Image (cartoon, rainbow, N blue to C red; front, side, top):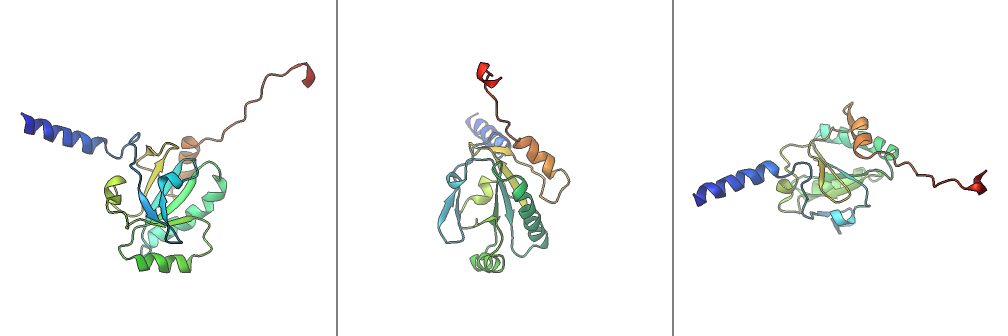
Amino acid sequence: VSQSRYRAQAVSFQLKRCKAGWKIQDAVFTDEAQERWTLADADGTPLYLLFFTAWSPTSLKEIQVLERWQGKFKGRVQFVAVCMDDDYSNYRKFLESNLKLPLKLLYGNAEPFIHEKFNLKSIPHTVLLDTEKQIAADVCPLPSEQLFESFLNRMAPVSVKKQGMKTWKDR
């Protein structure tokens, strides 16, 4: 019975892992200056992560499109592109040839369990984390997909400033 219970718990864990509401354990990435960058270093807005490889034309196209969306969602969503190349030198070459990209570009394969933490099965892969670093959406549209803008508008709506009550001075 105990072995069956263990298997049931393992299956349950796998089904719940990396779904909406799942709290991501802090992941460690390497930034352009070869410094540690963790999820705690994010700016406090929802975090859209695009996992890519420098050798994939599809990934490179998604990065270019993501760059265009960055201005529209500034202050509402932080966009981060995470290079998953096996060889760190490929990431460095990509950085050198894309110095003017305004995106945060990180290297992800220094983290040993990054594939498990974000349930990476293919590249490019996207994940949206909420302000608490929980998975808000485990399946996100790619930046080039038609649903991308409406998806982000729904997940990170524009905040409307509430006006206080009017007083006799406002007349």
